[in-house]
Amino acid sequence: MSIAYIIIGLVLLVFGGNFLLKAAVGLSLKLNIPKIVIGMTVVSFATSAPELIVSIKSALDGATGLAVGNVIGSNIANIALVLGVTIILSTINVEKSFYQTDWPVMMFASLLFYSFIAFDSTIQQYEGIIMVSLLIVFLIYLLKFQKTAVVDEMPEDDEELPLYKIVLFLVLGGLGLWGGSELLVDGATTLAKGLGVSEAIIGVTIVSIGTSVPELAASIIAVLNKEKAISLGNLIGSNIFNILAVLGITSIITPITVNPGDMSLLDHDIYWMLAISFIILPLVFFPKGYRLNWRDGIVLLSLYGLFIYQTIT
Image (cartoon, rainbow, N blue to C red; front, side, top):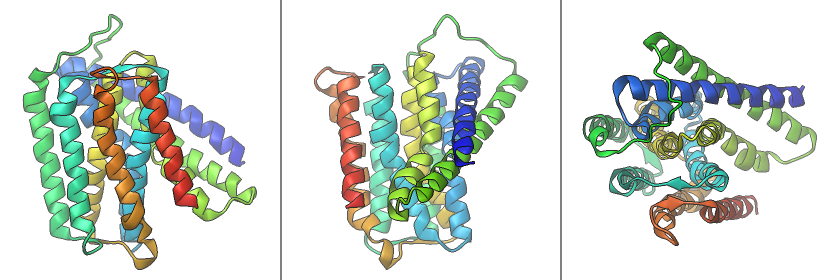
């Protein structure tokens, strides 16, 4: 049964990614908004839904520490694993908006998260309100100012869709990615346990990767369809959403506290998240400026492998 879950999950991810991509391109044309902005908003919110659901459920169940681990692990996987795989498949040319706005906001959100939790191991409700408020300000900025600051790619096969189709594809895409990731993680976890793999290894590999599977599916499908702006925007936006929306909303519901038994999140994992978030900037400029290619992908995947190794050992 676990093999069947994995296969069905992968199929749903492919269909979900396709529907979400069509909705994103259609919305970009309908509203005359650059695709990277759509990737950082609509697509990011849809692909971050699993993290939001898991974190809120954890908070309501009293396991608030799981929300922190979920976001840290997902943000590391989004950049080191998902972006790594994506740019190995295809070089991405980077817009100036990346280092002028998108990357600085992601780093600011990451450092804000660190400052809120590093010293007292807790994200308070008022800190959650600050996070959500900053997200709203960022979204207003994107839609008001970055809309005119980005020159968009306009592939010839772009299709303008009626609004009802955009909404339908958006819903189907989001549900497909969520359902596919749930089945894939469930099937992979069951299979790993059946093979005698420890729960610690399962948690740091399958579960952390599993919540990033929607981003991986959406990004790969976007690259294969030559919608690279959506791909990069999705990953940066997803990391911003994970911190400001997922942790912000969860901590508003109930303060998020890291228990003493989970302190490796603050002693080890969060520093990996900050380092991997930072390293994208020099990779964009070296050895060739304004692009990410397969060499950068190998660097990111190597770092992810090192992170997994250190976490397990």
